[in-house]
Image (cartoon, rainbow, N blue to C red; front, top):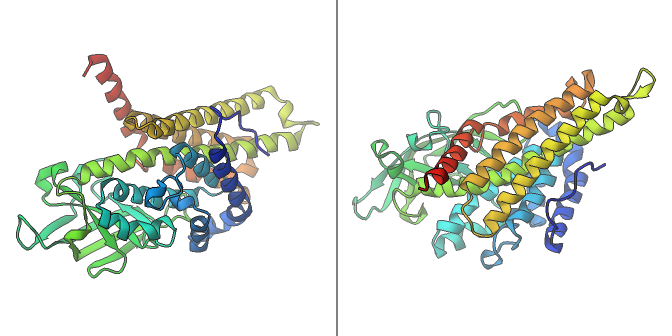
Length: 394
């Protein structure tokens, strides 16, 4: 049953095709085992491989580099459908795509040819290694060191030392985009990006993160102890890593907003179905005006999240700056997901609190989205900065 309002803006045939394919896959293959994977905290690589076969791992990339050539708005449609069935798999897919964007945008022809084909095909799982124990929202504060090996002016390579934390898709991932600093005293100007493969000497996974939600998407520490990386694996120039990270995160936040919209949509559908089926005092709960108002407000939240997400994606497709739009979308959609899933639990009462019902999992999954890809407090700062800049004319 679908209770979503009409699509904000007519979809192209290509967008409808991708959405329908994602919906069919999600309902047939993802949804049936989502609760079991969450309970076991099990990432199913076979399902990820299946998304590669269907082209989801290459969907928003141009055909010139081996991508599927869909618009970013089309990509949000696919993300919404995947998350509607399984938020954990949606996050794994989103992070995989996020880790490819910097290589596509900043990489040399050689790097793109060497790094991307297996990732676009879904054969190599990607991860984005930025966060550290002392550097979450303040990405410029990372401490993982990149020490030049050889002459400072023309190094032969770099030695990485330090610890990353909360890295989604680790340790399952095969390819990692890793951010390290040449000198912590340089702040953001010292941050540099590197392409690191699983199994490289001096690089190993650390502690597995035990999470409240999205438990079927793995996350762990990454430990670097003298991991030597060739110059050919440095992405961009020295000191360009901060710009690279921010450019990728802008795109990733739209993807996360789409996933949150799908999660909220799933909770809305469960809530609506329950009100029509559950009878109290001789009539369906749907006859109670107070509960109808709750359901209507849930639908309002979903519609607002969807509209802002599609608007941000359309801005990216037009080549416009997306920092403000992506923050608005991610902040609004993740707050909407938290509110709608919480309301769904309340509507269902004891049934909603039970682990036999999916809405308690939806609520746990929603909470993380208010924290990762930039906390929603950070997004408020970003939006305010843009508003004030327009007022001041700067």
